[in-house]
Image (tube, rainbow, N blue to C red; front, top):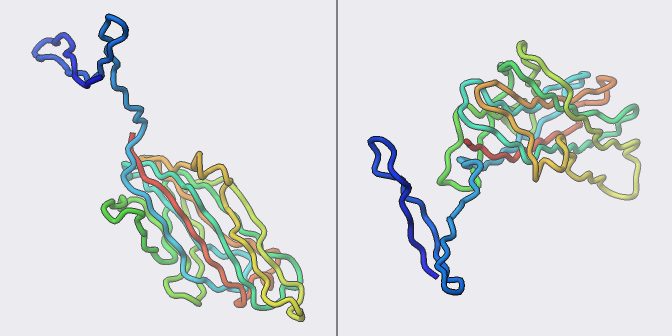
Length: 231
C-alpha cells in the first residue's frame, strides 16, 4: 500500500488540481482511496481567564464579569466553561445570592471594571484583540461593579444559586461549595458560541433579593475557558 496523487482535468488557464490518494491492491485490481480530511473549523486560540477575588458591595445588583466578541471580530468564540464560586465569611440571614448570566447582542459596550489577562493553553497561539474579558476589579480583595452596558439587547441565559451560611455558630468547620456553572454542562462538548461580525457577549451579575444578601463578607471568583476559531 502506498500514497500517490492523481490530477483532475485542467480548467481554462489552469494546469489541473492534484488530489492526494492511497492505493491498495484488491485481487487483481489497484484501488485508489481518496484522502479526505474532515476539517470544519480552524482553531486559532484556546484560552482561560479568572477574575480577581471580588468583594460584595451591599447592593441588590453587582456586575462582576463579561466575555465579549466585538462586531469587529473575525473569529468565533466557543465558550466551553463559565463558572462562579462564592465564599461567605459571615451569615446571610435571608436569601442566598443569585448569579445571573445574560446573553447580549447588538455589540454592547462595557465601560466599567477592568480588563482581565487572557491565558493561552498554548503560548504559541495569540487571542484576537476583539475578544475581551472584563471583571469588576483589578486587585484581589477589593469591591467593584462592572455594570451592564447602556446599549445592546439581552435575554437571561442562565441563573444559579450560590452558598449561604445560616449561622456562623457551627462545629463543622468551613462550608465548601463546588464550582457553579453559569452555562449548561453540555457546553463542554457543544459550546455556547459568540459569533464574529455581530457583537455578542455574556454578562454575569449578582442579583440579591436584599442588599444585605451581598455584603462585603461575600468573596466572588469567576472563571472562563474558551476557543477561538475560523471556518
